Image 1 (cartoon, rainbow, N blue to C red):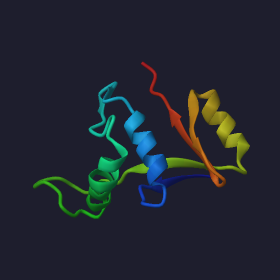
Image 2: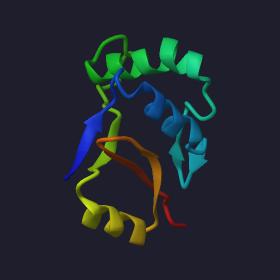
Image 3: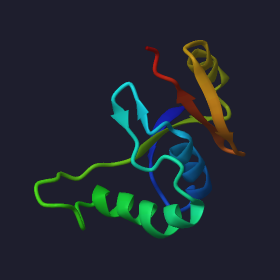
Image 4: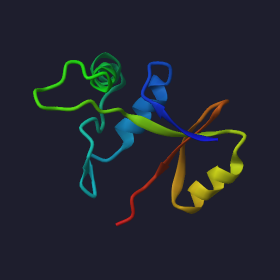
Length: 106
């Protein structure tokens, strides 16, 4: 099964690796957390993401936003094959599933 998984503390290592590896600017998508250290991600970035999802500690005029990650269960190889055929790369794998990144095409 494919599902969107919100940012959370349990998956902090995978989320850090995913966010830090994203380019700072990819086709206009800006990533303010490119190359963030794990310590900074744990102490500053992830708590900020979680707060912003709840609408807390946000600058004036901003609206809540969620960081979501596409997760593919390990027992769903067909969906994984479709994502790989469309340019997806397995970013992380654990006992439950795969975290897949699909690069934007220019």
